Length: 401
Ligand code: ACO
Image (cartoon, rainbow, N blue to C red; front, side, top):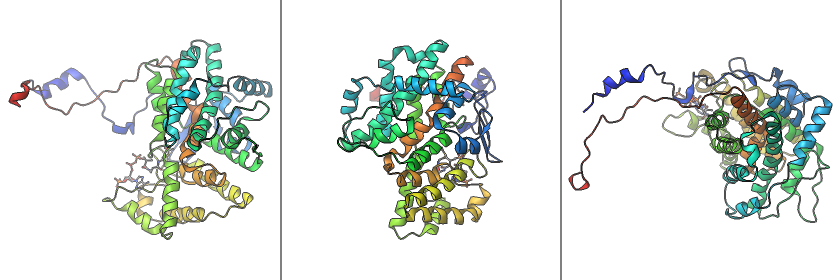
């Protein structure tokens, strides 16, 4: 048998960094993040400014192409996205194959991957023109199929994009318009959603974005890479946390509203429960997005006249955690997911669509990161490992085992 310790000499020097806590995977010009100071900027613009003064499609353009669009460029971008909002009719038969109970994120991942089959030219976006088309196609079609996951779960007929309406308003229409029941636009709702999408647009090398870059690094196409990003986002430690937060808050409410009991559970190392929406790999200070969302939650609920007891529970949890030694010493603060679900709920978005909302917001970031990875001609992502299994063993026939 080979002595495994001798193999180390053959493998060279390897840095072992599970979860990539201290490893950079690329250089990037898209998003600047300082987790100690709680700073987030897209292409050099402060997230606070973008959320207050920007619109989702202009911020998407900024994230993807590097500069804020001129009025002419923005109009053209919106027009080009509209051109590509039609989704191939055969995609409907794929949706029909899912049970109504399927989680929308699973359906979304499958439909996104299926776009590959119907849009072969955009798969690899080999020149600037194809890349621009691929960007517009993805922005247009992804929004439509994202809403179709909800329509499917409700058994409603699928809706089509209305070219006379804006992108975010179309999202609400596509979701909620019923035959003989036109969607009545509510500007407060549309503005709040627009802001939430901006806040989610990119966040450097998080789990789903790293997945998009990693999958794309093998030269798998844009849609396959984004489909993988959707799957990565689904997990409750990442984008799925927004659904998990709301379910947690509802449970606290249902069981009598004792927030402190749940804080104690989160601190108990024998209990797998974690305070959902708290903590972040990079932010060791307030997540700047959470600050903006908390303020927006207050505004949206009061303007819409919604009195949700769950908001009070969330505030109580935050208040207690911020003075609790366990959370303070580990620098655990509310993250982007802590308050976003409360707004989604007030806007009438069903809980199992929350992570889909995140995906719609994150789409420009995934596209921008895929594009940058290709333009930088990055090598295939292929981490190493330290083998800790058996040394060489002799094979025995089954009757001798
Ligand atoms: N509740 C209770 N304890 C926590 C929490 C939490 N939400 N988050 C971290 N901790 C504790 C850990 O138990 C660990 O304690 P220890 O040092 O005594 O072992 C310490 O804080 C550090 O936590 P790690 O898990 O090592 O931190 P990591 O950077 O790997 O994880 C993560 C970050 C996944 C976000 C984590 O904080 C978590 O699970 N939070 C809840 C889920 C959540 O809100 N996810 C959304 C993140 S934002 C986003 O992806 C969009």
